[in-house]
Amino acid sequence: MNIEQIYTGCLAQGAYYIESNGEVAIIDPLREVQPYIDKAVENTAKIKYIFETHFHADFVSGHVTLAKRTGAPIVFGPNANPSFDAIIAEDYQEFALGNITIIAIHTPGHTMESTTYLLRDENGKDHAIFSGDTLFLGDVGRPDLAQKSGKITVDDLASHLYDSLREKIMPLADDVIVYPAHGAGSACGKNMMKETIDTLGNQKKVNYALRADMTREEFIKEVTDGLVPPPNYFPENVKLNKEGYADISEILKRGTQPLLPTEFEIIANETNAIVLDVRHQKDFVKGHIPRSIFIGLDGSFAPWVGALIADIQQPILLVTPEGREEEAVTRLSRVGFDHTLGYLQGGFEAWKKASKEYDTMSSVTAEKLHDVFHDKLPVFDVRKESEFNSEHMLNAENTPLDYINKYLAAFPKDKPFYMHCAGGYRSVIAASILKSRGIHNVINVEGGFKAIKQTEIPVSNFVCPTTL
Image (cartoon, rainbow, N blue to C red):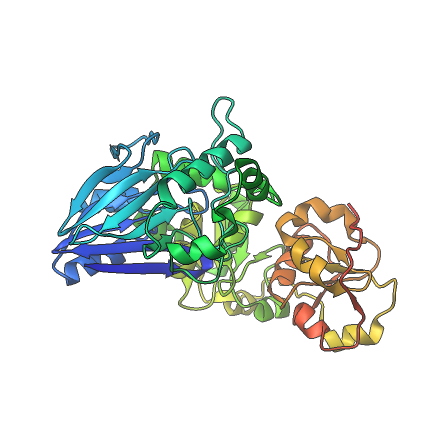
């Protein structure tokens, strides 16, 4: 028996390759499925099943494409009603895989079709659970993401989750290994550990949601407390995962079309495409196409695209580092953005050589900010509210990047103002969005709050009011 966790950091997502005696199961695959197929071929094995723990909201799974390419059936748990052929397992239905058994355990709560897959080894011993978004390490799946049907409420879903955990998962042995669908950084939970594998016994000790003496009412309150609104693209990803989508090969073929500067400019004007610049933030600050949006590949690229670009149908044109065009298109497709029209051949340097207009971004070091600092200096901190509340510049205002479009009225129109995040990535994203909307008097602080703390600029851990 071989179990491999295939973890994708930018999505904080774990897919699983399970092999026994020449037969393979894939759980919650990414959209680009060829690596799973190649691994099975390399091991002279055959993909027998594709298990989905639920209809994912934060990424587009590869189940549909993998089924078409391999002939393996897709398996969902009870209550799932996809638009394509799939096995809808009954609660505790068993699936033989080589010398082992995988059992579908219906664990509603995160969504009503959520299912945990229990793996029993060659000796019939419970070995591991693949818990999807039902149980994370340090947390459980948030109960507010499911597509609402009828009169079901967030509290109803949380109540279902309470039962699923206590009746289906917690009775399992402490040495059972927990393989969750997500880790720290995912928007599907709020308190996940940085580790990606643990034992159920340890989770019973450290996970607040598995506290043995917790009442249903306490559970509902703790699980629903502090939930922030989910990104706008989540329902669209659920729809794609439920109804199907185009093969990624089609998306890559269209998205990796090289475009010369003039052709790139014409297509941008004719299609109202967003020009998405995915280079490093330092390169974007030095020069970029006017009104382009920066979201760098080397940060949490796909989740930020999903959070900040409202419509997954939005046409996109890419400015990329050389050789990373396919990577950018692939990572966009993981969150349902399938309408990339091509990339700027030769990158930004080709744009400049063609004598096209370009823009720069005003930027200062933390030391320079210290030199001009005073109590009334307009400074905007785009970190999350929890980061801001922990510690922030004296008199800074918190305008989190996730909701930057809601704060446009807060930014001065008639004088320069300063913007920072933790390390310099998110503030450039935010500043690029402001500049695309005609607000050019923004000054980015290089190195963010980490650099600011190295100066003598006063900081506070008290919450300052935010201007709306």
